[in-house]
Figure (cartoon, rainbow, N blue to C red):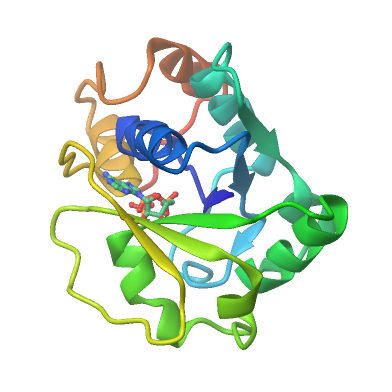
Length: 189
Ligand code: ATP
């Protein structure tokens, strides 16, 4: 699983997913769209779930093995990764679970809430992300994945849109169409 706010999804997410999919030889890769990202709650308004689902669906359309998961949207409330992994384990008995994250997110794991059993639930797949701090996660199974460095973020893309600058090539054209039709990021950060 690859969890995120995806507000909007960008090529950093997609290249991270592609390289992880190949490096671990995954059968399926679920883009798990967070309902309320507790770490970002209160800092800014997150776009509606349906808009974020539409953008991720547009981004991955036609890529075999890539799927959108609504498990956190259906659960509602704040989204906690460990709860999601428990649910995915119940839905996929016998499967090995891998949790894909950027190195910045991995470095933050010791601060996560409700993360007591995380190490037993999944192997972490940590992709490089420019600017991420070094980290150690004793007790976790960790696979490192190298990808071409893409120092972009959804924050930068929202800011570009808000200030009328182009986002061409930073998101797939289909994502740009989806965010246009949802009229996202025009007047807020
Ligand atoms: P924001 O700028 O709004 O905080 P973001 O760009 O960090 O968003 P998220 O949806 O929060 O995107 O990230 C989901 C996951 O994707 C996280 O594990 C994050 O580390 C990873 N990720 C995001 N951008 C990149 C990137 N450019 N390179 C590698 N990993 C990335």
